[in-house]
Length: 328
Image 1 (cartoon, rainbow, N blue to C red):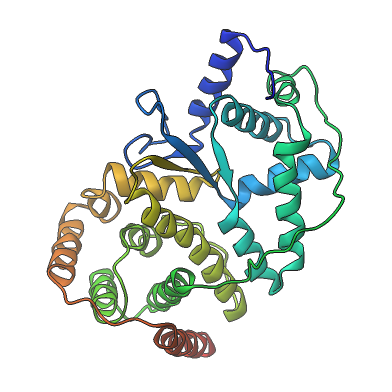
Image 2 (image 1 turned 90 degrees about the vertical axis):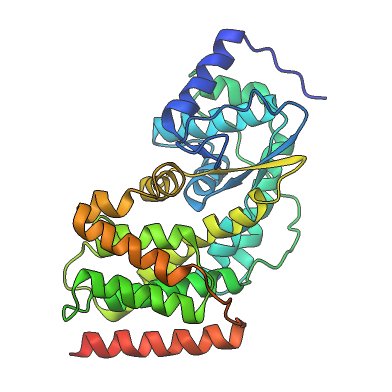
């Protein structure tokens, strides 16, 4: 058993810091990033880490320090808070994203082994001292052996969201359609081909309404757009895969941790104000027209049959159309 000597005031300060930064999310416990787990005593809690937080974990233990003091405080506070409350951390999706990016397993396996050692090699006191500023560095992790796992898996969640992003990109760059036509096209296409994802539905409003940073860069080439689509697809994969866990919670609670502002905004809009997001972005008249189309196209519906081969075929089709659009 690891012993930690911590003052109540120190724990309160660390907890309030994490709440202030709005790092931890859950549809009912923390829909707007303001966490309250006081009513969940006795239940197991797991925090699913986004890639942007995992990277900070690993940089710290690999280098022994972080140049950014706020990142250092966020990482150390989060780990200390988790240790104190008996909360587990899961980096599986972040490692799968990394494997997908590099098209191999070796780098993700190294990261996974480093990540696992964080909770074996360090005492809680180190994280407390880092969190309250008593120290600014820690000993680097030493790996004796590397255990191997397979993280190179692009499952149906990722493929579906990659496909959605390609379709939305085609609509974003198609200047021949009015905004209501674009949404009508997208809603029809989703209805006929894939599962409905509420996160993608809300994200489509951000993207087609010009409120997303994804396509802000001018004169982007097809290859750049494709890369952006894959990155955004992973963001949506985090949320949709996590939703399969939190929708069936009984004795275990699944939180999600991220530092990505756009991902936070998407989650909050989806769970706090989904009924008004189209009005906010497009104005009442157009917003209500889009919302009416959404209800008409999506409910009721017959679930389409989906398999990996169908997703691959649709991805090929949308990539070809997007590439042709850029050639014009």
